[in-house]
Picture 1 (cartoon, rainbow, N blue to C red):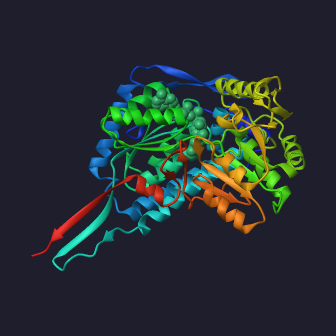
Picture 2: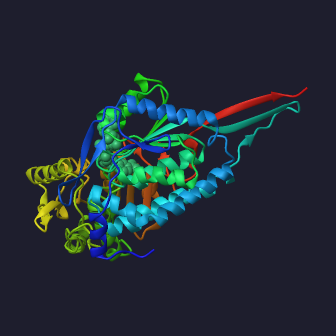
Picture 3: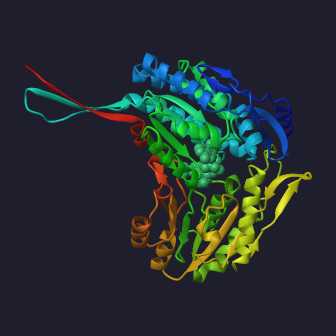
Length: 498
Ligand code: NAD
């Protein structure tokens, strides 16, 4: 597919028609109350659309549509191979509509258009295709029994799965949940983040075009405290799968206990350690990875390499390399294909990041890059790449998730100290170790308390690998075949023969 020029993207953005409703039972619908809220483009701070602010009644309607579709068997009892073919068709439709979908992410969220186009949308299509291809390759189990017995262990779809999604990779985070849940035969209800509903609404529309029956894929827009809570507490939702902050993730555990004990899967925050030893085999690659993985997507990444643990003897030399790379990430119009540093999603996140930068300075960390903000053509919410050195692991900027382009560099003198610092966190999402010593590499990978560890690289995004957190980074995994298990119930069947 041809990629538009800067002018082309600008023109597409000017003429872009935003959806305003939810998507229930195969069509767009407004909220029952007719209430709306505004979405704002963070690169211009202008209102882009008035979106339905749904509430309990709208959620009830979506759950009924999803439950009816599930009970009808139109999807839940379709042969897995047929479901898989439809998911692969949906993947093709995502690819065909990639420019439009990328534009939606950029307008809603401020990320650079080429990152949206090449990362978010391509990976979303790949995810749908992968689960579509996988679902008819799975088998159930028959156990060893006496001659007169046949006993099976089978996996069945759970029923209605609700997915609550953040704003940082709107379509991709939704696909990580929707693809395995749909592949397993469930009906789904998706609640996008307030800021970023467009691409998920479009996906629901494409799902109908691909052949997913009406009512199987629903989207409910609205404010988290209202519609998210109504979903969390709903008595007829079987499973809740969430990506977002640890604080809100904990609320979903409460909602489940207050309602029907629905299964809850959580993908939450991270404060990820990236350990660089003095014998790092490729300092240039390590510096590039360290910088890219804290500045990519404006640092609004759960697996961001936000804590750099660098061996004292190479600290200054290594930091200089990262600073040099950081200086090449200059805020620009997210619609410009040359831009590699976009806008921060909204004003509250912008203020939050700047608040953390102020705290870092107050607590005695040394600012060696950035720490300030920019405007592009006199507007927009941009934070410049920021690096702190002399950070201590008990400082706020080493403990709390900033979710912005801010690197906290901590030095250490030996690997035991590095691992102790790395694990001294309430999070455990991802981690990395850079060394030429194979023994240290393996031992450290084992000793790090994180769901994903990289050696001499940072953060694999391969769809076949599970992604999930230890400790307060979450419960369960996205991606890989293991994600399908999350959306199934396990049934034992014992048959005694005459
Ligand atoms: P958030 O927790 O503020 O919101 C996530 C979702 O929850 C949104 O849809 C929101 O509307 C909803 N919500 C908010 N308050 C709610 C409430 N009281 N009850 C019910 N629902 C509510 O997160 P965010 O700011 O959208 O995203 C950033 C966070 O997401 C970061 O903490 C980041 O680490 C995390 N994240 C994690 C992963 C992962 O895979 N582990 C991936 C991406 C983002």
